[in-house]
Length: 226
Image (tube, rainbow, N blue to C red):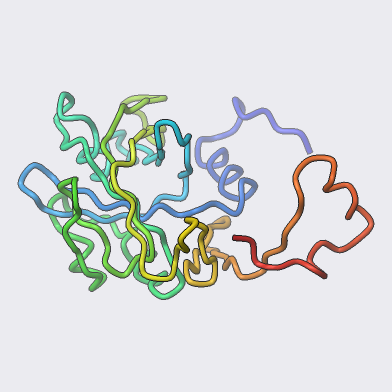
C-alpha cells in the first residue's frame, strides 16, 4: 500500500500517525493560568529534544474549531498571553486510568486534578504544580512554540521547554542517575484507545556489535536496561 497524505482527510492522516508511530511516551502535562488555576492533560506526541540545554517537547494539536487547547493556552510564553511554564509528569501504571480520564475536555479553568483525584503538589521553580503520584517530573520553562497550521483544526503546535528541575521518587534513580525501569513503570500509547506496558525489555549493544546477536533472540538473555 502506498498513500499520498495530501489526498487524505486530516483524521485519516492522524490515524496513520497514531497507529504506526508506536509506542509513544506519554507526557502528563500540568499547567496553570495567570490566576493559578491548574490544568492537567496527557499528550503522546512528546519526547526529549536534547541535553545541552536540557529540552523537552510536547505537541498539543488545535481543537476541532482551530482554537488552542488549554495546555497550550497556559504554557505559551508570557509575550503571547500564557504563563510560559509547564511540568511534564511521567505517566505510570499505578494511575494510568486517571491519565486517560484527564483527556476529558473540561471548560477552561476547571481542573482535571479534581476530576481524577490526583494530587497537585507545589513545584520548586515553576508556577504549575507537579503530580505527586508521578514517579518523575520535569519542571520546564517554555522556550518557544512552533505552530505548523495556526487556527486550523488539528494544526500542530510544538511546545519546547527547558528543564529547570527534575524530581524523582526515592529509588527511581540510583547514585549514577540510572533509572530503575521497574519503579518508573512507564506506560506507552499505541493507536486508538490502546496502551502498552514497558515490562518486556532487553539489552542490545550499540553499533556493529549489535550484529553479533543477529541470529539470536535478544530477549532470551536480555535484562532490564539501566
